[in-house]
Image: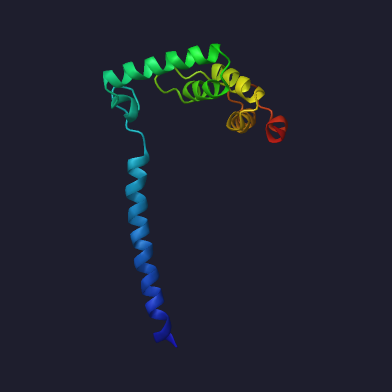
Length: 131
């Protein structure tokens, strides 16, 4: 009976060692590498890309003034993640709240998550779960 089990045991050991080595490799590549005090993605952004991002953010700001729900959500995400702008959870919460009031589904979901986590507002798990 033991001769029937050993191939499966050997296969499990081989797969386990492959997964372990691949997870170790992935773990190193996922961590942000800081260059000049910036995360890797920010350090790799070239000046033309930064100029393009600033232009797109300005366009989103104009659409936000026109009360565009999708623009409010997208700009809220920019402020929430802190990409190309200084991270500002309060501004992100305001923009996403405005989008959610216009029944933007993704904004409603994210607003609930922000309420649960207390990002840009007081932590309110009951309201966040029921949002």
